[in-house]
Image (cartoon, rainbow over all chains, first blue to last red; front, side):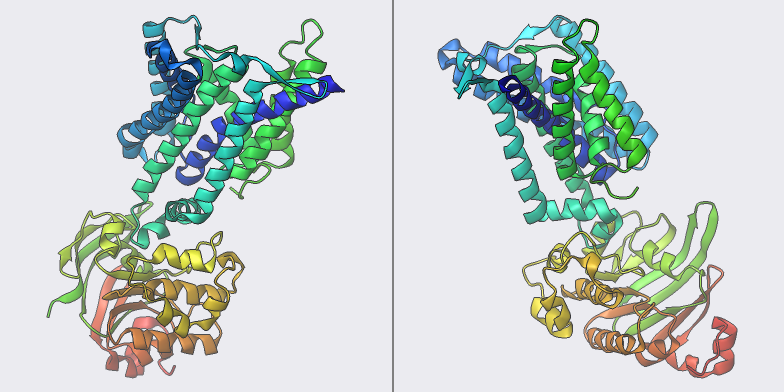
Length: 301
Length: 232
């Protein structure tokens, strides 16, 4: 029983990271119809910027301060990278989906290549404080502290994002823009600025997801292709949840995270079945697409 | 006095079909100018071209500015209120949020708008998607009247509405026209006769008639230009 609860908790934490990775992607597609294949790059950039911060700053700062700064830096790095991408590459290509896909894939390939050139293709380790590696004991269970961090970040982002979209003027502009971009313009609103903002927000969450995935699930290791592997799951989550729906992304991320952890643990333990967790998410995607093509919470396309 | 709108030699092609073929007309400042014509002659497209919502060639002057190639939001900020043909309220947003989105300054006239349409105040927290067609049209008009706009572009406000509502909207527009210039696209000849000071008639993507609203009293002319009986 306690193993089941530990696996469940880990699955929820994984879901939280998937949510961080997917919600930006979902917003960007929902508002702008841009399938952003560079989203994984924003995660990787966040992770590498976090690594730079955590390793370059003097260790006299102390490990807790360093990892906090690294996480903040990763978030900002993702935001800046996404903002520049929108302004320079995406802006001239609105209404040209094929070009957008090509330019974001091209950017991703080129930048990942650059990262490999600069940092090497072997994984780098982010120094983390000891408590992040240790578990907390609750009853007879030992729950990894890193999982609490992931879950906390996911919940905070979900709450803030929902508040932002429901209550603030820019949030309302973004929701209106998802429904009818043209009419938003016809009210005298510069939708372009809202587009850049959505990219910046999405990039920030991607950067955060990038470093948290490394710290929580990959033994503090980062590599140039990590963001791209995470992007595959982010796409699966977005499609299952419904494009453009934040709540849908949250629910789907949780389902995918749990499913992956359960199958990895209970079935993947047998020899030769190590990839069953990944396979199960793809099967889930297929089932959802067959049964409800617009996703759990998606609008009719 | 300069014209509120002046278009000259306006061409628009959409998906290979040449919808506007050199349209020229002007909308004098003050009063209501009605843009008339049969279905599909390009009335809505003309309004959309003025707003920069469709690509066009030719000259478009709005409130004294040459606005060709301007982005829509910049044209609108010159002082335009727009009531689109299909209302285009944001169905996922509440009535209140729809209005808030349209607010262009702190001087938004919520009291005026709510006294014109008390129903909108009662339903402020209701999602616009759950409103009836008539209520959505109220919201769409309220959005355009919320700010003090010197120019209103109004596209078929009577479309699909009960006669009582049509007459209510006509009075609202009549009052709005006391301090704004209105360019009105309308099929309902009764409404046009009641409101319009000037008429411009389009056919096959060209202006075929310009004149005073009195021209609509000639049944033969109305039949020839609009293909309908003039006795509305």
